[in-house]
Length: 234
Image (cartoon, rainbow, N blue to C red; front, side, top):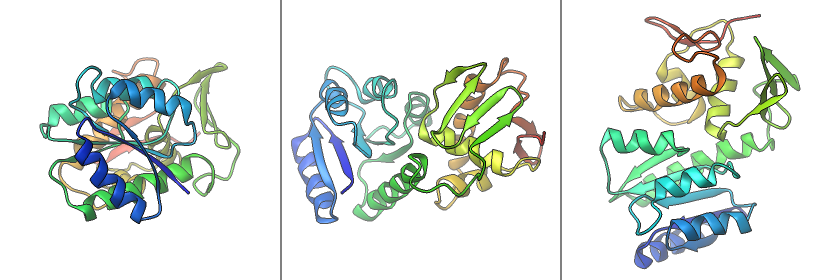
């Protein structure tokens, strides 16, 4: 049974989401604030998904997500009334995987939950179809596709599950430039929308900051103007 943590300072919202999730067969944990969320994830390492409000007293959802990312890779779906692009960028920059603006429909919520859980199953190694080799080399980067770890000179580079999947999508398509639509539909498994371009740009930037020696002059994930992003053969 997959475990989902619901974090919101509004008890009524938590209850509604909990009932909906339990009716779908999920095991649901609850937290009323950011501090409780961090502690709950520490105590329950088998959590598969975190649904996280942003605006909460004390520690915000953004701060909680950043802390959780230091020790856990479960996908984070932000539920929030904040709808500006800058808010979304802030969420993604701090380790969020997806974003849903209140009010939302039950159908939209479950579509995103199922997509995130499906990707996390792949990330945890329950299904490995993108690369057959147990170790992949991209310039001076080594990717352990069994444990889903990335190294440079024996130093581990911490990636979120979504960053890893974006990287592996480009690795699988080495030598071919992929635009934002191809990456989004290939990794998120959802219909591409105009706003999805910004999601891809944020994740590519995060990957470059972690993987490139100089992210302003990227050599690993190159931009092919007019075509998209590419990892070269060899």
